[in-house]
Amino acid sequence: MPPVETMEVDSPVTEVEVEITKKDVKDVDTTTTEDIREQLRQVEKSVITKEPRFVFRVLRSLPNTRRRLNPAVLRRIILHSYSYSIKERDNLLNLVGGDDSLDVVSPIQRTRAPKQGASSPLPERIQEGILCSDQLMQKITTQNRRTLDLLAARCYFYHSRTYELAGKLDSIRSFLHSRLRTCTLRKDFEGQAVLINCLLRNYLFYSLYDQADKLVSKSVFPESGSNNEWSRYLYYLGRIKAIQLEYSQAHTHLLQAIRKAPQHTAVGFKQTVQKLLVTVELLMGDIPERHIFRQSTMRHALAPYFQMTQAVRLGDIHRFNQVLENYGKTFQADHTYTLIIRLRHNVIKTAIRAISLSYSRISLADIAHKLLLDSAEDAEFIVAKAIRDGVIEAWLDHEGKFMQSKESIDVYSTKEPQLAFHQRITFCLQIHNQSVKAMRFPPKAYNKDLESAEERREREQQDLEYAKEMAEEDDDGFP
Image 1 (cartoon, helix red, strand yellow):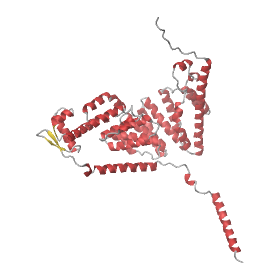
Image 2 (cartoon, helix red, strand yellow):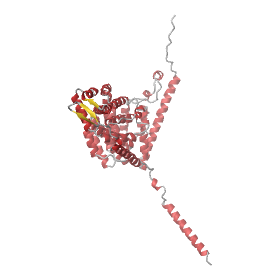
Image 3 (cartoon, helix red, strand yellow):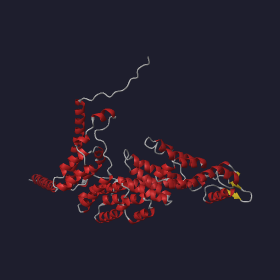
Image 4 (spheres, one colour):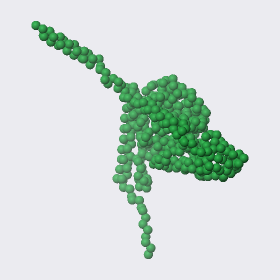
């Protein structure tokens, strides 16, 4: 008799477990609602005291709050906050939709699904989001309060993000320009920084690099912008400079973008910047360090770029073509495909440099065979250009159809050590200047050591009494 196979059967869910599940969901929603109400009180406190640091505190906690949102929490906040405008309250309630019963995990989902958080992510309802974002912009544009600047800047970002997800990013370009002019006139530095980044992203989304470069040249990014906005701005600047063949400036901007990015969060942003930075370093003729590709957060994302780096380092044209064929779609999704195509010349230069170091004399036909070129004439043109650019030290014999390498020159007798030393000193000075600019002090800290008017009167009174006592002692000293 064959053995009977055992089957896993879901255990029946009792009413007590269902009640416990509902209670856990309600407790999480209640905690989230109380946190949001406390944030609203912080915003109100910021308006009363005119101190923006309370709003900064609320904005820093916004990513954590966003993960815990669900329709039930949104309805509670709307009912609690919109007591003065019934029309707006009903409109927002219609946009949120759903009821309390839909937010509780069903017993079947609880037994068959893996353990998850009580609050699931909200679905992406793009059209409702556009409608809500338009209403929010109508309300913000009618206000002119400096205490609203930080919140309005964050609203501009989400407004642009909503239209980007809908594929209608070009339709709000004129609106963003008008708000940028308004923020510039009102000295709204945070809004100005966010709007410049939104416009740059708008242009780069449609590959309008010339318009983006004109925007950078015609506008001034505020020095008091937050580090996050500075990181975005420097990344967009690096993309523009890389397309314009200004690789040194692009490398500098991308390095600064990584340094200003958050250390423990924003992993996706740092991966995007690092992909572009690796490509730019390869275009500059440098090879990125291996530890960059070994980081746990970068290993999988930079795997195609690691193989590309190996192909460039070895000067292997065949391997370069193979990597480009295998990961072409990945490079296009990362917006680095155009730059990767340019790396073919770097691969050829590296191969020519390796050939010149390995052979004192080699025929052009052999060079064409090693570089996978069509003819010896193509190899002659490429070698001549490499000699003219200073890539190799050699000379060509047109009649003999060969390349003759020159004797190697001592590097320390050239200007290369001086240039490398100058580059390192410049880098250190830039870090020092940026550190000084990034220093922050607590508000009104300069008044800490200054005495008040009352303390000054007490001190002067004590000085007068002490002077009188000294005069009396002097009088007592004479008969």
